[in-house]
Amino acid sequence: MKKILLILLLIPNIINAKETFDSFAARTESWAKDLNGYIVSSGRDVTIDLGKNANVIKGMEFTVSKDGQELLHPVTGKSLGKKRVETGKVVINNVEDKYSICSIKENKGIVRGNYISHIYPVPVSIKTNLLEESETAQLRYALFKQGALVENGSSDYSIVCSREKQGANTAKCSLKFKDSEIFSDDIAVKGVKIITTAKNIDNLKSYKIETTAYSMAIGYFLGKENGYLVAVNERSSVIVYELKNGLLVEKTSVNSIGEKIVNIEAVDLNNNGRDELFVSAVTKKNQPVSYIFEYDNGEFKILQKKIPYFFRTYYVAGRKHIICQSYTEGAMTGMIYGVEYNKDENKYLFSIPYSRSYGAAIYGFGLIKGSENRDDEIMFFNRHGEISLSDGENIKIYKELDCGNTPNYLEYSEKLNTGVNVAASGESAGFFVYDEQSIIVPVYQRIIQMPDGSIMLYSNKLAKMNVIGKYKAAKIGSYFFTDKMVPVWEKNLSGTAVTDIDITSDGSYLAYIVSNNKNGLSKSFLYVVDSNI
Image (cartoon, rainbow, N blue to C red; front, side, top):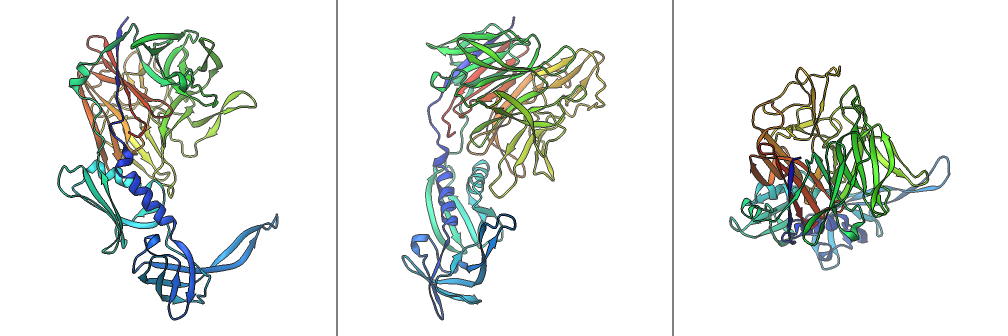
């Protein structure tokens, strides 16, 4: 048996992402949403009930309206509210503490008591100085994820964020209208740093596990109050470990599967406070026969079995989700479905299709919320292990990081008539690799979006092109996705490969496995980080 070296690292809350751009973004969101009020008086000019207390300034324009015809539902007859009718436009000339005097730009019957409203979402341009590229990407994510702002390079409104000098720990972020400042904050700029270095990794205590791990899952299988457990799988069984008195101890195992395990997942779908263990497996004839377990009275018991789907979790917007995928002609390229638990029937259902599923590997599929004003974006790995991002109409492929080479793969003992023969691209193994005896199908990584909006990813480099199982280097890091991949931090690992990465449902614990295939030694580094990182 190969040995796995599991290394545990506890990290205090050294970085708080909210100290960077989130608080400033929250302030701009509140400002944009509160730009509504009333006409207090009307004559040659008008008075509105927004002043310095609402952070309005000279030159800002508002639309004036009144209640119009009541709208009734044609079937129920119930009121749907009243239609707003525009009565004009006004521009602020003078700002007092609690009110402002405005000139009339358009007058279609403005009277006292009319509503005033500002354009929403507010268009803004972004201007930065001496910010790192990753910090600018993080600023954009913080500002636009809530939907109150939308980026427009020609807008009169702008967000200006600048360091006073290179390397400074603080920056001034301002919201401006033309050349006038509406408000500003001096904030701490702490770009997310790499959590560890090679030096402190060498000094960590190691925990040996007498097995070979092909994938892993970290979760609250006994409930959050009892801490996390780490599950790793061999080819046909799962071993679950706990950290006890500074030692990694085998808690229990699941040996009742009897099939070839593809991957394992942890998520609390039935909402009882304990993560279920989702095990994706295949028969000797390469058909999916997956299982769902839950820990009860000292052992994992089967909740549902022989499910004809493969499972995969993804983590986005502070929540862990799980999806499944059907099987098509020897490949995990079928329709993608949502997974839900039906409490009344006490069973799991897999009949909710994702409207924009793609014929791509399920492994590494996620919904990435760009902002409240945009549809969900789908991030997934294509057949070459390239990261792909779709808005439902267009697909953008990022080639900066090769994610195609994973030590976790299925090897079929005979060729199947899949109709797909994708050749290797560069150093990537591609989705399918044929030889005279077998088919190799990589199991791609999960999509994990951190609270700052960046995506955790890893990449492995083969020791020899197109030869699966031998690796000379690896890289793990966190990346923002704009028009290109922008690294927040990266760590290079020599002579190893990253096998798997997972995160707990609350985002507090992050773990990944690093494997060295040359000497059969696999190392796992388990990071415990604050949920704000």
